[in-house]
Image (tube, rainbow, N blue to C red; front, top):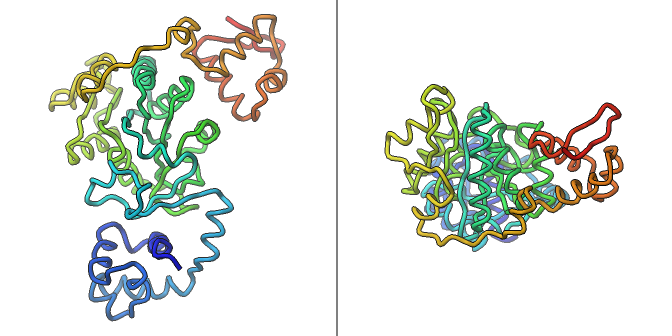
Length: 361
C-alpha cells in the first residue's frame, strides 16, 4: 500500500494533528512505519494515552472501506508531500498534513488567490462593498477564497460565480457536508461551476465551534492576502487576519462607518496597520500585480457578465415566466436556478408577480 494511504489513516485519528504527525515522521521516518509501530514506541513520541487510543482506533479502521467511500463521494485527498498540495499553504509550519478536496483541485495552486472574509450579519453597505471589491478582484484574475458562511463569505462566493470566476470554499467540517446547511445552493454552484471545496476534517465530520480556527488558518494560508470587508470587534474574520499576519501576508480592510458596530473590527485592523482598501486597485498595487483590462461587453450588459443571468433576462424580455419555464430554458438543476433567481431578486434585476411569474424590472 502506498505511503499516502497511511497519511490518510492518521488523518482519521483525532489524536494526531500537524505537530504530533511531524514528530511521528521525524521518529519513524515514514507514516507506514509509525502506523505499524508498537504501543511502547508510539508512547515514547506521543504519550501513553494517545498511543493507547491509537491502537484501539486501528482495530476498527479499514483502509478499503474509507477509500471506497472517498471514491464514491468523489473526494480526493492530497498530502503535504505531493505537488498538488497548495504551495502557499505549505509555507505555514503547522499546515494540515492532509487535505480533502472536492471539485477542481488545480485551483489550489493558482498564482493569484485572495481571501475575502467578514461578518455573518452583513449590512447593505457590507453587501455593496463585498460585491464591488470581489468583482474587481475576479476581473483581475484572482481566485476568491472564503469560508462559505453567511454574510460576507456567501456574497464573495456568489459574486465570484456570477462573474465566471474561480472560488475556493474552506469548510470547518467534512467536504461532503455543507455548514451552514442553508448555503447548500452555493456549495452546489461552486462544484457545478468548476470551483473547489477544501477541508482538513475527515468526511462526515460535523462543524463545531472549535473547528473554525483551523478553517480560518487554511483560508489565510491559501491566500496572498486577506481582505476584511466588514466585521465586528469579535468577528471570526479577525482570527483569519491574525493568521495572515503570522504568515507575513498583507491584511486589507475596508473603512466603515464609525457608528456601525459591524465596522469596528475592520476599522480596528486599519488602526493596527492594515492596508486601507476602497477599490480592487489598492490590493493590486500592494501586491504589485498589473491590472487586467475589463471586458467592456460584460460591463455594458449591466449584470456582471453572468451568462445564466443574461439568458434569464433575455427570456423575460418577451414576458413573465413561471419558475419551471425558466428551469427548462436554463437546463440546470432546480436548486441552482432557485438560488440564482433569489439572488437576482435581491439585486433588483427581476421580481415575482401575483401570478407567481418572474418578470424583468
